[in-house]
Image (tube, rainbow, N blue to C red):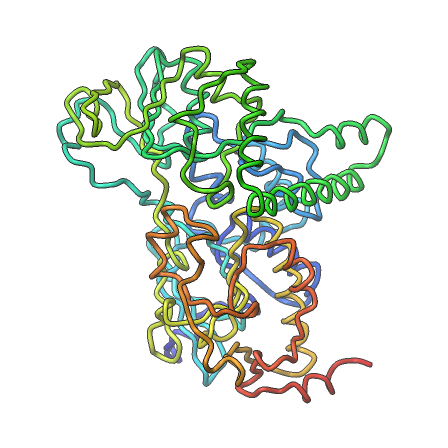
Length: 509
């Protein structure tokens, strides 16, 4: 809990946003537009904006969501649907400059603690700025937009014999752009979105690329263009209209695909295979054993392949795929469980990341440390026992930014509602009808089960079996549900009270 001396030195704002990535910048825009009287700062530990798009620098780094839906709803996207990290950073930079958000960002500021005091109804946020200077902020509301994984320590399994290897071993997240792979043998361990991105780039200049995967992944091949957007531009439709219409088309198509993946997964797989055949020109393309996953489509992310690039590399003889376990590293490479030795000059671990709840920042409420796994999650946004805070967690099957925009509306509506009724504190709490509700881990394995999430479930909050108490990962349901949340509902406590009657009286007629 902050002392009076600390509070005297603190900078106070109405809202403190954590993170200047895609979530934080979008949230700041909505706050400015919908709550223009609120003061705010964004604290960012990096020296620049961008979040994940600044962290990753491996060859070919690009989006695996289309930018018509990954871009913000308020700023039209005018480039190709799948865009490079630099193009996304340029887009974010325009949002920051055009809306004066830059003056609110404090770069190089690493938060060390967030403490809530119920006596003052304030968060005290302690941080270290550039040069090691200690800084303190107080705020009425905390908006957590820091992402969900560790930007500094990626996930690398403890493989046997790693110390024996004489070549270069690097995780994709820590890739140095100065690394020269031209004419070298490159081994990529992993088969997810990162592998799908980096392998076609390696294949252009490496002597050869091998992908070692424990199990296959689903890949979605498509041209990197949107015919509807191109046609609308051709006939002179303005960009805001194109952005809105194309977003609607893509979201409709994604909804259909997601439901089909559940209801007729075998048919969806056949469609995915047909796309691979079309882009490679190989009618009898061999899918067994390297491209036949053990799970249904969309239980993990579909790896997007513009123009079928990873498969064309395989057909051209530039890529070899090995499906096996890794038994041990050797001096020259790795040996698989079947005894095959794969020699490589560079080994790239595309093995995912470590989930990091709230950026690893210690939280406390009235001096008691917060254990997130002991909280219950309200619609993937708020937590029981943690006042005046919202957390941005996006979608896995739809573009992350769709939820950034949606939550921007929700948080601003909530803040404006609190002002209307004169409330200083907002909590979410289980209702009487929720008392006997079973609590489970944050998400069901049959719903979505990538390795990083399964490894980190004990860091995540609990979920209930009712819509209010879970993040269902269903944008198409939430786009109707979240805008219509009753802010006077019994799950909300204002200044410690269930105040449905009070809230209704305070609202304008």
